Amino acid sequence: MDAEDGQTGLSAAIAAHVARSEFGRLPPATVASSKRAILDGLGVMLAASGTSGDILPFIELARAESGAQRATLLGFAQQVSLPMAALANGAMAHALDFEDAFDLVPMHPNASLLPAVFALAEARAPVTGRDFITAVATGCDLACRLALSLRQPLETGGWYPPPILGAYGSVAASARVLQLTPSQIVDAFSLLLGQNSCPGEIKYSRNSVIRAVREAFPCQAAVQSVLLAERGVRGFEQPLEGEAGFFRLFAAGRYDASTLFQNLGEHYWIEQLSFKKWPCCRGAHACIEAAQTLRRRHGLHADQVARVRAKGDELLRMLYEPTAQKRAPRTLIDAKFSLPFAIAAALCDLSIELTDARVLHHQVTQALVGPDRPLDDSELEAKFRDCAERAAVPLRAAQSRQLAERLWSLEREPDVGALLTSTLRPTGSDRPAMRPAGGR
Image 1 (cartoon, rainbow, N blue to C red):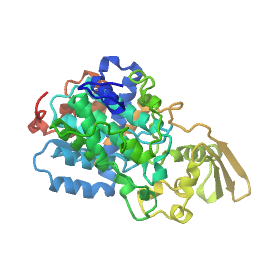
Image 2: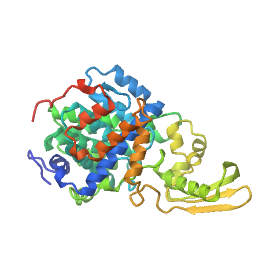
Image 3: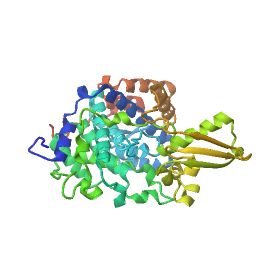
Image 4: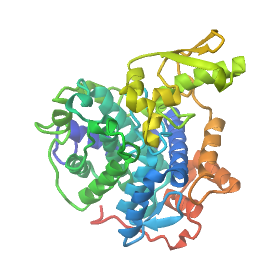
């Protein structure tokens, strides 16, 4: 595996792929899926700006530490510095647990990615819609490939995988937005390795909200990594496969490189994303669907239900244990991962025992909104518009409809940053252009 600048190895080959990715080579289904992810991700962050109290410390820090104003705090119609926008908007990406998911791993590949590239697109003028779509498709695909290549779960070492894996996709997408060289992309992966961490303890502390705002940190780290790489900070020769690189540190060196490169540049995993209908753990969707089906079918009222039983795969255990914590969640994000709270389990059989001794049963073998049963474009747009109207500075119905229309045809936009500024911050004519440092 060889790349430019005399570099060889896995990291260099991936960096070369990212740098050479082109819109014209993307399959039509990849382009369509990328626009769905962009629309959905932006809407979810806008909704979080107006409905999640957990993000407010990040907004306050961004406002206090800004200095030069370069990118919008999504939903707040205010600009702050580029790294602070990535941090604060990143906090919004998972705050509602409403973003897209990659069920095969599982993970949320765009939660760390979209806040970073939205901020960079505003700071750099212009980033075309074609380049933006290419960046999202390429970065999301890399995050999914890294996850699929692992032969030892990150949890074995006490890590929490989604933001760690998503950060590499974010760096790839951000590097593509900035049009970094392959050598600079390897440097950016190296710089990320020095910042990227998320401990498994995030699952166990009952009073912590870090699980909700976790994407803030990889978003900011990704932006800082590409900006420093662009300015000439040299990294490691092999940040991914090296003797003490990503795979060794996080997975004891147990990975399958062929998974990373199989059909690379031809098949994009962004086509296999799930878009949520309900703002909670993806594993909850099957049980929610089953419960709502039984309620509609039998005209049930809450006071008729004596007991609910759910059967499913191993995810069911995560949603129910530790039992005391799941039965009495203390934070919103904890409730989203609580089976008693959300009646949640993946691929479950669900039965409801009534007070009159009847037992009702409904089976869901493939959860709604997965790749095989997706929300269609009209349903996804309805979700986006509902989210946008819940922002801290709400978009009016006409505004959200117009923004959605432009995002559906994003490949025709000459400047994504200008689109964001004009629609989310109407006074954005003062947006400063931030040119690449050092030139290319």
